[in-house]
Length: 77
Image (cartoon, rainbow, N blue to C red; front, side, top):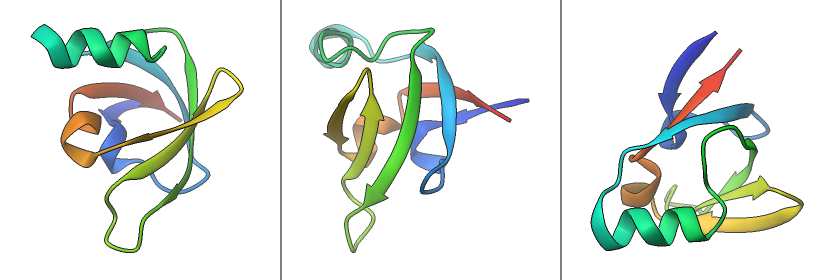
């Protein structure tokens, strides 16, 4: 298994969040959305220019900009 940024994940790829590196207001907002270590995440798709990314976490769909996804580390197989 390897650890990569959420931004590097491919469509339909699944992984487990290992850490959120964002600090301050952005870090709090990301965690408030349910993006916390230990949660399973699946990439559902990307916009035509690859920003934002749509992901599935805890039975709901969430979109993040790539600059936010860069702060999220995910363990994939």
